[in-house]
Length: 217
Ligand code: PMT
Image 1 (cartoon, rainbow, N blue to C red):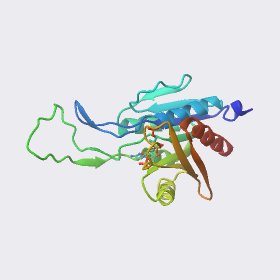
Image 2: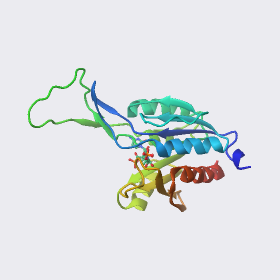
Image 3: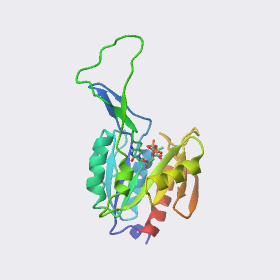
Image 4: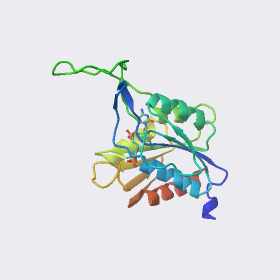
């Protein structure tokens, strides 16, 4: 029975970091390993869903059976996400998207210059908000919130401001949890309720997130 909880459902999941190029050899990125997002994809497959996995550059093997799309930048992530979101019952944004990118990407490798270098950054599109604000074929939209303080308030703020149905908040200030670890702890928030998922493997947490999601699709 558990194997059928998401039968007939299509779930699109984003995972890993984005890379924002500065020049042909340099980029801005973050410490996301893709482990949380890949665990969500494995869990959705285990519950019988069809899974689209949109991934930034990571060093883990993709789950067999998922339809994999590889991206690097936030703009590429936006394109792939909008394409797949409209064919999905649920969309989960677990990718750690760079909020800013370089205003200009140098065509040639930048030369070492003086003692200081100033980079001008411009805001990236908000991928999960774009999905959540689709006017037609909008999937049930789930975000993540990576916070180092005031977890509940910031997460609930993102739930509302990005127009999400659900958000999974993690405290990324704790060593051994969050970015690049095999373990995590999550608090799930909906408009009217919340649920704490205690420290566990990302595999366990992902299965619990998917079971909560299945009840709401
Ligand atoms: O990959 P791992 O090493 O396993 O680590 C997992 C994780 C810590 C990366 C993951 O659990 C997590 O928290 N992912 C979201 C990271 C993040 O970007 O959080 P945020 O609070 O900055 O963003 C909030 C939400 O908006 C997220 O759903 C994010 O995907 C989305 N977002 C953010 C910026 C942007 N320009 N577009 C977005 O869609």
